Image (cartoon, rainbow, N blue to C red; front, side):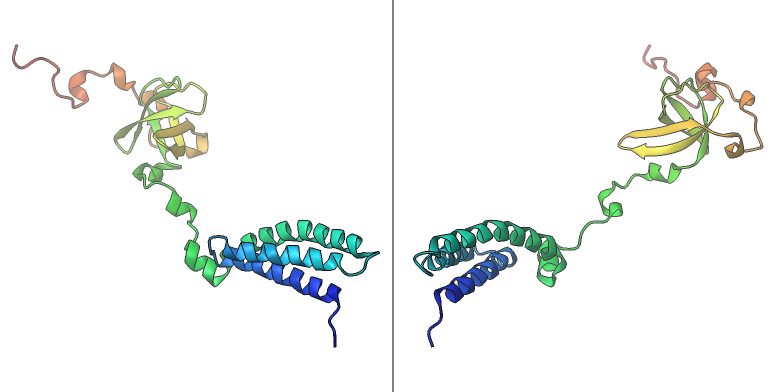
Length: 198
């Protein structure tokens, strides 16, 4: 029994496709890619020999199929490779959002309510639980003594906005708070700025 040329061409085409996928899963430095290229070229050449009248058209058809199928196979293999056991072992587990974010203790302040201690145009001082931190506003100026909510902590910035009425604590009115810059230095707990050697 003689196998027709078209059957050999189809077999070489299938072998070339399998080798392309195998190259993605088992990197060999291009060796399998060369073999798949040889299989595709052999498939096109053998398809061209099928008959003197329809051979060239069949060869062009196989060449067109190769041009379309190879990129699709490579894209599909790269898409599904990370889901395979070998892909997971090679790439490791994907990082979660928590792994990527920097460990910043200020992230615990998100949603907390504080008091503006200085005029914020847009940056200034905010007090939260007795701790004064630098912050910036979301674009609106904030007067000293205004309740603010921390909405975002990113890079080296703490972003605040004015607190709504239901977010304000009920034990203190904003008018009782003074601007931190208006207080005497001895009330701030800072050391004297005078030169001790003078």
